[in-house]
Length: 288
Image (cartoon, rainbow, N blue to C red; front, side, top):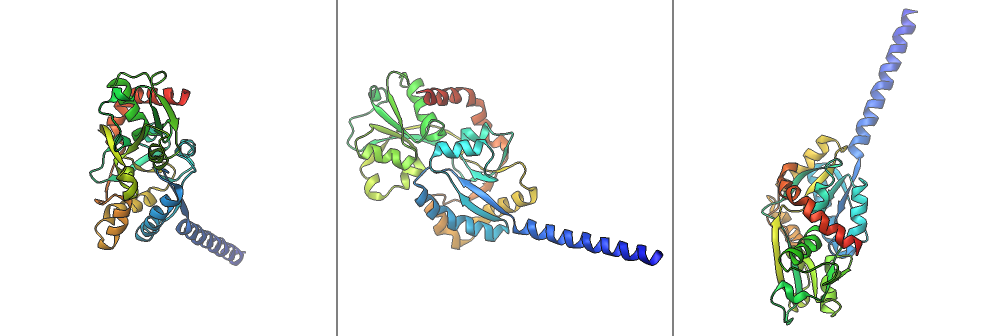
């Protein structure tokens, strides 16, 4: 009887050990989707971010898979539902998702500043000159490229967003800039970073007409159920990324030349303080 019990305990221990090894193997093989806000055409976005995330996966030991969405609006809907384990997302959207996501890194020295881009030869000098004009935005919820510039039109330019301008949704920053180039819009909301990613020939035909007040930059954040050790490894690899000279060209292509630094949720308190006013602008746009 005693021998049978010892044999039984041995079998149980073996099963536990095998299960433990299997669990560890599964954890090591876990692949986390990394959602990237589609500020530019998704094909170009993938060209920039897939090599970056592959390198980040290698450096961190955490397997990351690039994912995005057809439009900024679609991305926002998916992020709000908690679809992405990791994401690089809209600043205003992030502070509205404190219950789902925690920011852990940010671009060094970056700030979110919206711009209004117009044709280089456009006879525009002040915000009030845009009365009656068509303005392209990537999406109603785009913080830097829509909410900030249109908030400025409302507060500094004294324009009524419902009556004084026609706002059209382009779907991406790049599409908005193209709308201006094609004469379909007098101005487009965007960011300095995405404007600088335009081909030289296109950028030469445009100019930044207005730059908004600046806020904390787009966050790198993780869903709250992602294991803390995985988040810590990705954070450590991000912070070290710019220290490897081999990564310089990748950072330049992303227009994030200075690399990244560790961050905490309170780093976005400036956006939280302005949240109510800015959300009202977003809702006004969404209602149009």
